[in-house]
Image 1: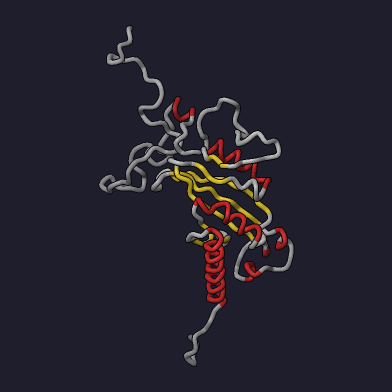
Image 2: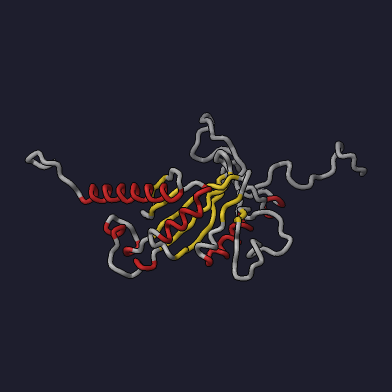
Length: 246
C-alpha cells in the first residue's frame, strides 16, 4: 500500500493473476473436451500441468493438438505410484506448439512461462494396476509409437488400439524376447540387491538409526527401497524344515 493509501500492484501480482487466469481457461477447455472435471497446476519450471481422467485421455490429447495448437508430441512416459490408492502409474505426455518456437514472446511467456516463449503443456492421467489399460495416442501423434512401446514394456501399461507403420501391434521396444517383468516399476527386483546385501544405510529402511535422529524419536515406517526383494523372495538354503537330505 502506498503512502496515499492506494493499493500497490506489483509485477508478482500481475504474474499470479495471469497464471490463475491461464489455468482457469485451460481447466474449462479440457473439461468441455473430455466431459469431466480436470485439475490444472504448474510444475517446478512453470509449465502447465493438466490432470485428466483416464476415459478422457484421447479427447484431451486431441483438444491440445487441434484447439491449443500443440502439434508436436515431445515425449510420453510414466511414473510409478505404488503408495497411492489405488496403486498404479501416472502416464505423462509433454506436448509443444512448434509455431511458438523461436517466435515472439507468447502470452504464456508474458505470464512467466519459461523457455523463451515456447508454449508447452503436460497432460497427465492415472492408470490403476488393477486395469492398466489406456487409449493409444498413435492416431493423434504417430511418433508416439516408440514411447508407448517403451512405457508398455517398462511399466506394464497396455495401450488400446495401438498402431504403427509396421502394423505388428503393441510389443517391446528395448528388452529381449522372453524378458519377464517391468524394470521401471519399484516392485521389480534388482539382481544385484537380491544376490548380496546393500552396503550401509544408504536408503530408507536399510541399516539402523539415522545419524540425525535420536534413538528415542519414533521413526517412520520402514519400507524396502526400490529393487530390494521381500524376505520371502527367491530360493532359500535347505534347512531342517525343508525335508532336504544332507
